[in-house]
Structures are given as structure tokens and as C-alpha cells.
Length: 455
Image 1 (cartoon, one colour):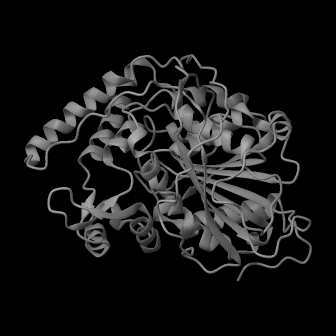
Image 2 (cartoon, rainbow, N blue to C red):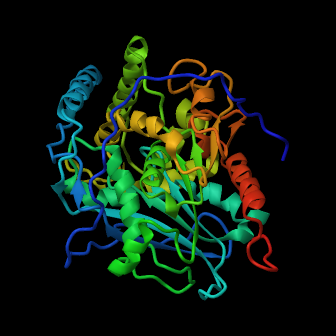
Image 3 (cartoon, one colour):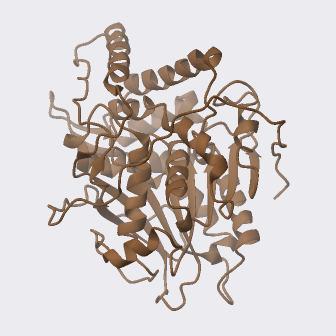
């Protein structure tokens, strides 16, 4: 693979001070719990490699940063296009008004996270000395969105170093959204996704990697193991996080909170944003408004997956995606249900647009993480993977990406993916996988004597 371009270190720069909050304590709800079933049937991964796929559920962190407030109602089915646009703008303002204080509330609520596990076949614990990779999605995408990247990564020589992969699903995304649908409110704080990730790492991620089958509902770890992990690395794992956009921001916040657990982090154009000075605060707000309105007005129902695919291919937004990513998005990001009016069978997005808008409307954690990132443990290597397409948008004025990738300069590197915008995993999964693979080969090597690539 040819050398890809990168950003050189910029001159020193400053930003306004941002108050940073202390996260609420991280622990699961008290047991016993009513355990929900998986909402989607088992499936095989969209790639051929010697790994077994299984899907698992576990409780999210019990305390929630925000209060549970009602979700604004959707427009009526009879609304015209103009009426829908007007309602969307009203809803956008309501979401802003609902946010109120950012002070953590500590609301007690039982929610569930969902994750896919891809484990190498033939591991018995004793021969599991490879990497554990953890992938966290951007806002609006299901956990399976990473499978086209995994298809290239696990087939590369670097695949020999990977024992297990977990792909994460936030509480209002994908299958997790189907489970939590009646418990999701109109306000969400990104710090809760970081806390949910930590809840998984501290309380539920098994101590050792083995090809043995895990229960659908992961078992809570002994308290002694949880306490150990709060200040120490995993005993039998080398843990590498890969986060895109929202997932990159919240994975980093998790690492800032419990750095000992992390060996390295891939930051794929994360929403980690330099706090704006007052003269650029309004353009930053306008960027968020566009995302919220886009989510609120996006179509979410089709007569079939075939119709959805045919329409998506014609869309400039979806048409830029790799075809394999688009197929898995439609397969795993939708579910079959009945139209409440006609009773006809339809296909809907698992994550409704209103919840995507709720996530987009949170705009303070991205600044807090940027402000804290210079203090991240320098032992944790950072690899920034950012857009390389000419004219690609930035989080801030021109030059912002160059500043972001050097905010913690030690033990950090960056690469620009040619032709890709913000949606790098969707638009350039092969190039992304190649860069991850090269990093793994350089930093970790094969890790397993005599291991071969998964061809």
C-alpha cells in the first residue's frame, strides 16, 4: 500500500477553557433483571474468515446523566412536505430546549446494550494471546456496519494477531434500540455512551478469550475482577479501540476515565472538537442544526429492502458508499413490521430519525473530550484517520482537522484517506482496513507463533 498523506504538526494554538464534568459512577442495575430476547435472528457475518459470530446483551450503566423526558411527537401521516419541514424545525428547537442543564442527574434506569462478538475458531484460553478489538459506531449506524472493514482486516496478515472483535451498539441504535424503544427519552448525553462502554469493560467483558460459546446475556464479573480493572490493564487481553465520529469521542472519554484498559485507539474522524471562540460559535451551531434537521426529515419506511436499496443507490449520500456497506446497512439497520394504518408489511429503520436527532443535538461532550485529550496517558498510542477528499468538511473552520490530530502530540500519528469524507468506514472500508492492518503489524506483530493470515 502506497504511503498515504498526513497532516504535519501545526504551530501552537489555544482554545477557550471548557468546564469538564466528573462522570457518574459506573455500575449495572441490581439483579435480578427481566432479560429481553434478541430482537433479530442469528446470522452469519458478511465475510468468510475463521471467526464465529454471536450477539450478546448486557445492561447499560444504571445511573443516567439526563432526566427521562418525553420524545417530541412525530408529524402526522397526513402532513404535507412543507408541514413536515415546519414540524421538524419546531422539533429541533424543542430538543434544544429540553437539554437544559448539563449537570449529571443520576436517574436510575434499566437499559440494554447489544454487541456482536467475532471470535477466532480454535482458541482454548491458553493459546489466546492476540488482540481484542472493540469497534464503536458513528451516530445512526448499527453494530454490523463494520463488517466490510472486518472482511478486509481479518483477511490481511494482521488478522493473525486478532483473537476477538466486539462491535458495539449504543442504547438507541440498531437492535439495542428495538429493545429499549419504550424507555428512550428526548435527551441523551454522550458521556452515557462512554459510561456504558466502561460498564461493559469493567463488569461484563470475559476475562479470557476462548472459542467456547458465551451466553446471550453476558454474566456479571466478580466484584474483585471489576475492582482490579479500574486501575490495571486486562490480565489476559491487549485491548484496542476503534471509534468513528460519535463512537470515537465516547471511546476516548472512556479511555480518559480508565486509561489502564486501553493499549491504543484508532480515531476515525472523531467528533472531538476544539471549543469555539464566540466569533465562530454560531457556525458551529448551524452545523448541528443541519444534522438534526436531516435526521428528522429522513425517510425511514419502505415497502421492502429491495425498494430501499434501489432508492439508496440513487441518493448522492448513500451512492458514495461502498456497495458492501450499503447492503449490510439495509440488512441489519432495518426490521420488518406492519404499517399501523394499512397493516401492510413494511421495512423500517431500527433507529428512528428522532433518536438520531436527539444524539446529534448534544454538543458539549465533544468539547470536553478535546479539552482533556492532551492529558490522556501517553502510553496509549493514537492513530487518527481523517478525510482526504478535497473540500471535505471539517469540525470547525479550515485547518481544524490539522489542529485536532495533534492536540495530544506524543505517541500519535495521523493519515488522510484519499477520496473519503467523514464517513470513512462507509466510503472506503478497504483503505481503512489496510491502515488498521499496517498499524497492527507494526505495533503488535503476529503475536501468535506460526500464525498465518486468514485467507
